[in-house]
Length: 109
Image 1 (spheres, rainbow, N blue to C red):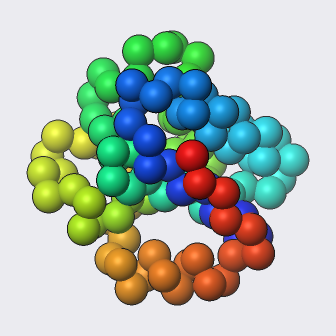
Image 2 (image 1 turned 180 degrees about the vertical axis):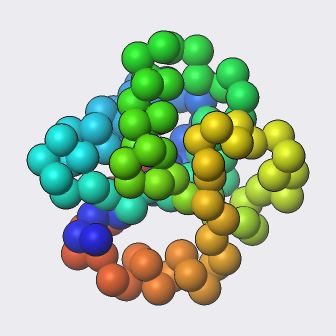
């Protein structure tokens, strides 16, 4: 993976989230799927019903289906509240750090 997109903004910051998800969709469309990681408040986006905009939810589902979505385990203790239809993949801080070092570009929203 060349690019990592870190989403640390919560769903209330819908402009940042929409830009992040649009970037993910564009990269997937160019066959350059990013490594998408949710952390801190961004994990709220992975909870059932958190994203109200239907098109943004479609972008998130597409990112999940085609690239996978990850979340930093240290940021979320209540994994039962995550939307399991998105198939979120947990990452330890060590794994997250290794992936960051492997990527050429890291973008944070």
